[in-house]
Image (cartoon, rainbow, N blue to C red; front, side, top):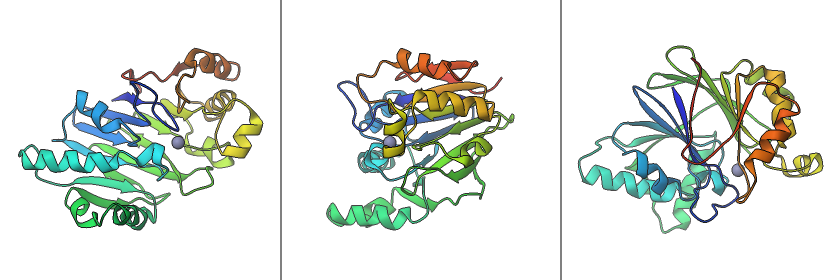
Length: 256
Ligand SMILES: [Zn+2]
């Protein structure tokens, strides 16, 4: 089971970059986690749309969802070419289907079109779902909007946690306890900013990694131009295990 970084940039994608998007892959297929701006084109450099298990969106802020619009057209194209027969399962937060359809309505009444390429599902915190060989759990995080962290468990028990966007909060340590790899946002530079914007600092990511006893901490969700090595050093003040700053196209193994 591997994690591939499609893009780590927020709140917009800088030159040559993609916004927020990750792929979790194993022998049986792959999941696209988040679909920020530019993710569809970067994704298609490595993958096709034939055997994708589904798409998970943590929340509908555009840095995580804007490329669902071009992705829908790419799926339609792959269906026209005979590469794919079924629509792609799209997992949205509770209430997300109505909200996404309202957005499609604004773009010219596209609901019917997208209903043919996405199979909409709404996940619920505390309710495990199966996606291919993965078991997937969700938990509300602390972003001031309807945003959910995710834990994916592979067929050999390997576990990947993803904080999505969040400030520090009591549930995080419990939900991500003992994951082999924690993909953790480390957006802001100060505690004051963290509190005001509902994000984490790199120091906060390090503290969470230690509290949850994670194996490998991968920092992400950076403003374009951010020095990832500097983020890594800051997290290392509070976490003694392996730390990486997410790099576009990097692949990180999850567990054994
Ligand atoms: Zn974000």
